[in-house]
Image (cartoon, rainbow, N blue to C red; front, side, top):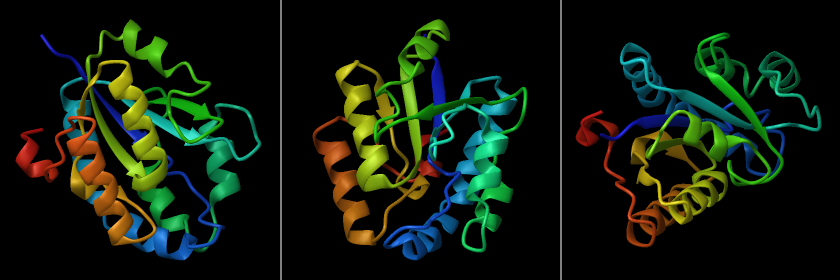
Length: 179
């Protein structure tokens, strides 16, 4: 029997960096498919785990991170995708992979998870590095192509190709994954 967890990576973001505006635009396109997945997971009582950069706050307090990240570029995204208190898990990460320097692997073991659905940004960095670390830990991977975004489409397609061909991830659109 497989147990699946939904990971939502770096969606609480200030987009204040080179190419941040482009990434914010691409991020808007993936919110609805991620929210549909989240709704399905909530209805089936399956874990939803947010993993986010810490922005030098170093507290796994999503409300503080939301306050810090909210600005003109990010406000609409954050309003739609924010974690729900007492419902979603929320972890902070110090680097690109959701596994590096976090309690994610321990949490997944406690929850008896063997399959991960990775969503979020940036597909060619943090999602890709997380997928790599998950693969090395022998998790089954699904990365819906309409649930990750990168600074540009070319980088996103390349990351999806790598995750499919090298990490054995299923990368179809969310509707085709039967989730």
